[in-house]
Image (cartoon, rainbow, N blue to C red; front, side):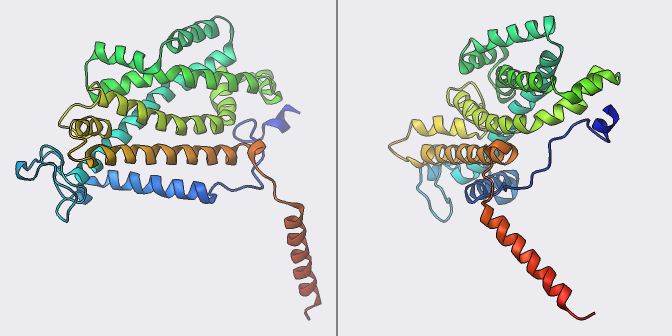
Length: 315
């Protein structure tokens, strides 16, 4: 019986999806927007018309023109070039925050949920302590102690995000460890690391993946807030949050300096949220709308008609 349950590879996998699709119109638009933003930022050195840190004091606070597509800031730096390079800083920092939370949060959640007892108590109480502070306030404390720069801001937010991912992973592990395939693993003498990482984790990864996608958007907003307050990316390095702070002082003279970075942040976060929602509906069978009976009926009738036409043809 246990051998039949095991098969090859991970001990248990959910059934492959038969219905539903990921790229609905809204998700497709969000995915295209994310791809455009990501590619333009990755290839910023090729597409940027100017050096993002090169100033021209003769053309400060200029409005959009052929030479400067989005105008210039108070130091004469090209705003379009700084948007592209600022996206590289913002997106890479947000991915760094999520990577740190994954490396720490997922293993801690798996161990806490599977082992229980004293390890679960210690891990959960540490998470409760971290969650008792507002996330940005805790990040302020870490950055103030470590120093103000991009790397410390990423490290601080990565630590802040660990408890949330740990608790999610723990709750998923508590559900999975009571299933039959885990009992089969234990009866066959599999080690705990093999049970946890080869059999339980693959069945939790879909929900974790959705949460990670959302966390990228949250990290982008929190990093922008830190940079806006002067605790994240430091001048002259381009960053969307820091550009908001720079444009605030000259908002009445040139509103594009704050409007463009803010609009890019909003569009990116909204696209991430829409894509995450579509991913959740695609991966979660309970969220999927089943096709109507008429669709299956038409499909069956067409198949039957093709079969009859084939049987009626001469050999």
